[in-house]
Length: 290
Image 1: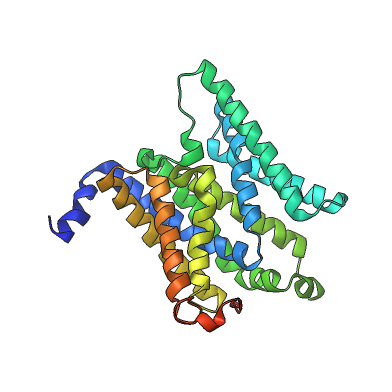
Image 2 (image 1 turned 30 degrees about the vertical axis):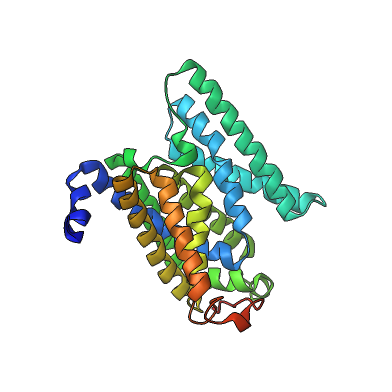
């Protein structure tokens, strides 16, 4: 089998066409939003929101509502809880995130277990993803969310850039810092919701952070980081899908493993920060410029 035949063979199946399109969309938007999480050192927040959407999914399923809406509402609610604990108590932000996401995740698992007792359905794909099972409507919904997220990033790029690197300076300059923070949380929640079918709530953090972190080692400016990270995310998603097809691997973990492998390669051989190419830089973290 030639390389061209190997690339074209999966495309004869409708489910692979839909899955690859879903993977490309998710890989792109995760890297763009993950860049903000990385430069603000808020990776744990992405983990908190991703785990917190689970009860919203379960409740939406029981009510017969759109599961994307349920997940989004649960993500925003968890963010509000974290902010309430952080601002109204002596508990630090990282501890508040750990408390909230573990509580929401436990509630979600409990609700799913209860639902599965009375219904012969499998909701576990929300945990680990089931990109091979996406429908045309799923791809459509993901594309709509992606367009909204990318449009918001493009429109408010300068404001989010200023806020991400200097929140105090942004506040002093008169920018609505609280609105920017809330807006960014909404974009993170939407991105996680869009990624649920691809990699699930457990693995989505890796797809948010690994491509952005890979780009962080290769370029210096935020917009470059977003573009390179999106390329890494899309390449990881496509490669993971082909590995899943040919080696009968679970698709979500395959995508994440490829993304993680690409990060390791960048960590070792980055032209400016690689552990092997620039061992003298060990212990001196790079800085991403605006």
